[in-house]
Structures are given as structure tokens and as C-alpha cells.
Length: 193
Image (cartoon, rainbow, N blue to C red):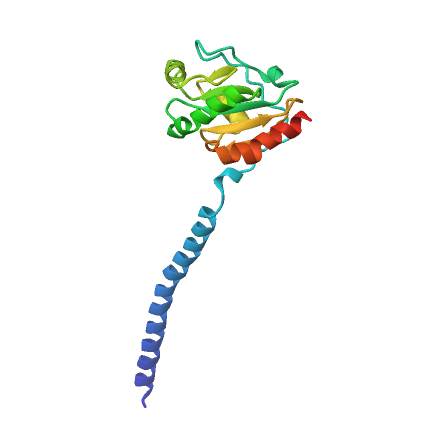
């Protein structure tokens, strides 16, 4: 075998191996990305941690929703267990959750405060007039600043504030009958003892 033929054979072998490597890199990258995505999608979005847990509730001195007041501030949390529900008239999940909030308001003595997040006050007032107002107090967070202070990711979200004015629990997404009876209500009962 001549030197020229040996070099050509080596180049062909190297060329095929290089093409295989170029094919394998995107495939390996895709597999890694798919595994990372699958792990992320398997997580419960309701378990997003809140830095507010154990901290005093943020000062929420906002005007009430017109016709659905009074408003509320952090001082109103003292001495009672309070649910702060973050909602909006444009939120479809809030409509799903609302009948349960109406039942909670009618059947418990838990203070229920509504924080209207990034919503036009008139739209919020109309929405509450149409669907019912379960809230003892409301606050119109038009610019979303209070939502930032509360660490809101989206609506609906519900916070449990203890009688000491500290945030004890954060529920992301609509409250379901199961989450109410199995998690939130037992926590409220515990905080009252």
C-alpha cells in the first residue's frame, strides 16, 4: 500500500467519525433538554417558595374597590387569621375559584380580604357586582406595586396571614375544595389555638 493511499484512507475514516460526532452533539443536546423540561414540568407549580413566609405582611395601604370597601392595611391583620386573595376581573381561573370563596365567606368567620391585581377599578367593581363579593375588605392594586411587595407570580393567589400579622402560607392558583379542606382550613384552625 502506498503512502498516498494510506493518507486518503485515514482522511475518509476521520471524516466519517467527524460527521458522526456532528450528528451526535445535537441529539445529546436534545436529550438533555428534554430531560430538564420533563423534570420541570413534573414539579408542582403551587410549591413555589415565598420569601414572605414568616415575615410581616407587606403594608397594603391602597384604596378600596369602589362600592366594595373598606380598604385594608397591614394593621388590619393583627389579632385575627386573614386570607388575602389576589384576583382580577380578567382572570379566568378567578371565576372558577370564586364560588368557593363565596362559600368560605358564608360559612366561616375567617377574615377574607381581596387584592384586585393590575385591574381597572371599574372592571373590578362590575365583576364583584356580577359574581358576588365575598371580601370583608378590598384593595385596588392598579399598578401592581402591592402585588410585587406580596411576591405575586400571577392570579389567583391566596395568602394566610396569622394573628401576629405574619404571612404563614401561600397558595398559588385557584383554591380547590381539597386544598381548602386539607391544607388551608386546618392551618387556620391551628393558628387560632
